[in-house]
Length: 511
Image 1 (cartoon, rainbow, N blue to C red):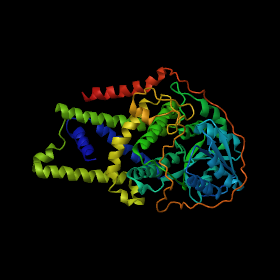
Image 2 (image 1 turned 90 degrees about the vertical axis):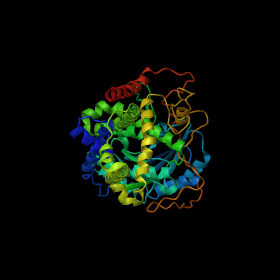
Image 3 (image 1 turned 135 degrees about the vertical axis):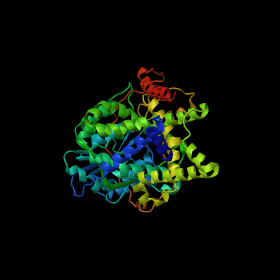
Image 4 (image 1 turned 90 degrees about the horizontal axis):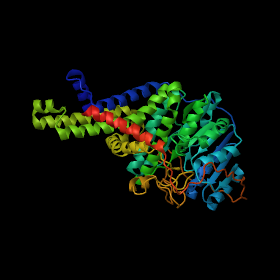
């Protein structure tokens, strides 16, 4: 923040040079201001709404105690029906857990085709409720999640709604605290701002509700649409949200509906998760861009800047290194040091930098800090971690968005295949697919973590064994089995050309 102010002073008072970091910071502050102003208009729906609901839970593998607790909490809220779609390898233990809840309206089916999208298709075709609620198999509901979530659907213009989301027991590790900060900041700023316009661009998929007929109407495009020469199964929640908006419906946040979810504690698993999200988000941004520019320009601005900011930050870092190496540019701290001497001057720079940075972060994340005051002192670490860890992953996700991949965190999922370059260990690790069967990105232990204060208790109800009740699996293969022989996709070069062009423009500007 202090450097940003000095750069602004230099640009407007002295020689008029505009630095990339100043542009980056100005965009960040402008986005924050827009989100603050829009989010002040947001109000959750309060009037009860009675409708029929079908809860669909795609699952590959979960700890049995966790999955039992997930079903127990869902059944306690009496949806019209709960459909579990077990996909991939047969999992008898999960089937037995589902059978425990047969008297509560839980039915399950199994499809050998791995992948979340096919599971969503199977569950949707089995569903009968007016509102389809898609739930991740590790998501814990609050006591009134469902009754709150359906309230917006009293408005016939609304086609999709999602919940407030937090991380279970964020105190487990630094990265879980960081993930909780990201989730809560999105719920406090981005989602209310977009919801006020009725244009949330991505309804988070941990628990997400749509009018079932919308999902049926867009199913073919959801399962087959290609862009840049490939079909990516990643980012299914963003895709369904986009298709709902294109149908002319509104997508909103119901902040009073609350869920908790797990998060990776291992850095490599976190990197895989974030790369999957980065690829899917930016892939869908480019695919939807013409429509968004014509119909939802504010949403287009949010998602375009989400792509642009990592490139600007990378250019700012490269520019700073270039100026140091070549001895060019301006020493923004020179006046202070010259005026007060090296000791007092350097101390002043350090103090002013820390104060300005703390004030900047505090203002932009105040809503989260009011809830989690302990994050005041962690905030600088969060920002540094996001910059060093997240920004490079977003760049990698942009460049590789048109490479074939499956469900990112699940091996052999759907149409995914191995990486293009098996010798690239980093990318192979982040995007690995192989013959080992589905693998969950989230760390799992025998003892599922207890939620933090204010979260749900994780007690497990005892249910007597009952006769297994199933419905026939709908095994619809929506993509051909991947060939061992790779095909060259020339359209995969487009993101590289765009990215390299941006870097070239930044390089010309710096020189």
